Image (spheres, helix red, strand yellow):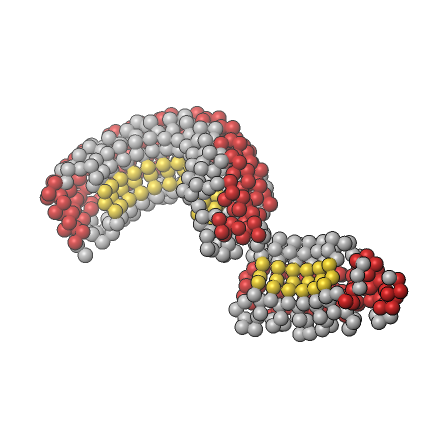
Length: 579
């Protein structure tokens, strides 16, 4: 063997002869007779790589495939291999995967790839710590020399915002011969085969994934997690509403988000069984300053005050990005809401929308929320406290912040809060002193009474009032009180777009009052709901007649639960036929 090595090495010049002797003794084969050289998982220092480059450039060497996976290669190793690519060698396939080449190494390699003497056909650079600049360098090289490379593997790298586009744009070049461009891991690619909502789609271009109301198995979640972990995945929105996500699946999902946290902006896990345990897993990623989530919906997730405390604690350590939080229909209680209030008080908290309806909150919890809002009033635009027992006492606390000119709330929902006319009157009175921002008010399911309706009238008549949506369903409004409301709308008709007076005893008389404003061409109502208002065909006829004289704006009309009769149906038909 020694004689054979010595004899063959006479054909080679040093340092090619040196590395030939070393490799032949290690691999026990005559390298000059081989077409493939596999040195994967053997640590190669720079001296050895330089010698290897010399061997590959020797005219006696005919290797067409070189595998250097996991060899500890770095930037300078790429310089040596670039000289091989420039030398018109026989090399057609090069695998440098699992080396810490980084962008600087790829830029060195670029000088070889862009040379017209380079005839490399397959290049594998998976898991090489390459980022956007490296992708740009590869794209630039292939634009200069597009005619040979047919396969490029970049799995396990981070393309940044434009890396994928830089290379995909090359495919439009008629001179480009690339047939296979790999970005995603096999596990991530499986997501496109098995996860509903991704079937047949290119996940590199998917930014929003809506799997709502799909029953997801653990297998689906694992495939989705693999996709989320891949740095090439740029999903910004994931909607898993009514997917019955379990605690285990929540753990799988959040583990993936922890490894690739920077892109997601919206996450909806509503109506699931993640419970406190799942929420605790989620909190691990919520704390991460690289996780810039803006919208989080956890409605009806079987959470208690413990889970709420974990969420708010996590968000307190990373508060500046979240704009929307929905914790409705969880058993937060006053203790959970008090923890939430600590987050709201944080001056870095920029929350714009807060939904905590149906959370078993009382006036005590409402007091904590409003106290927090008073200390940090400037960001919140939407607040939903519906279906809580806050009663008049809680509402009175809320009114303190509603009066604040720095509090620019646009949407307020207080449906079914066990308020009486006293509470409703307090709300409308507070809004009168700060009326210009509110666009939506929902007081449904509360007893407005005469005092509440009168104060609401004063608010609606205020020229600064820009209310667009008014929901007063089930407020025990009478015919007389309907007259009070419609008189206000007649004096300030131009803003309201949606009105719900359903489940009130306004009857035909009240409806006739309403018709006076429906006829007004300045009244541009788009949605009118009069369900179960004890109307007969007379009232229905009045409504449709009024709308016929001002028909162009209305998009939705609900007259369900009333006795329309033949006359009402006929008039309704005439309205529908009106072009």
